[in-house]
Length: 135
Image (cartoon, rainbow, N blue to C red; front, side, top):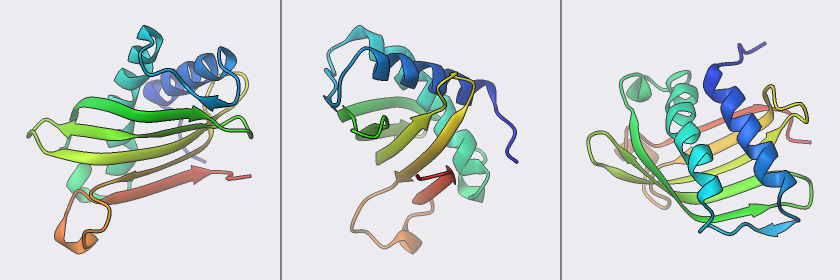
């Protein structure tokens, strides 16, 4: 079983908060309330990717910017956007997040980082991570 990190807890708490204040559908990206969630993703995404890819062990994110976020009918948060590495490389980022109801951790997390349509072997930062139950 995975150890739950501080950042996973923050992502879970913030995802629950966002899901509780919205109904199924697109979430308003102008809300100041998504800033804590974005900040938590800046820390959590590299943490998860470092578990599966050596390229992410020393890679940090400086910014996560959403282009679309929605509350799915099965109580998940779907996110599409971009992230900026500390070395100023901009990468597409998408994630599907299902927090546990108590906000202690995530029941499911899946993310893709890297340019869609490019050969993953050409981009060392291209990564896909998934854990938890997708049901």
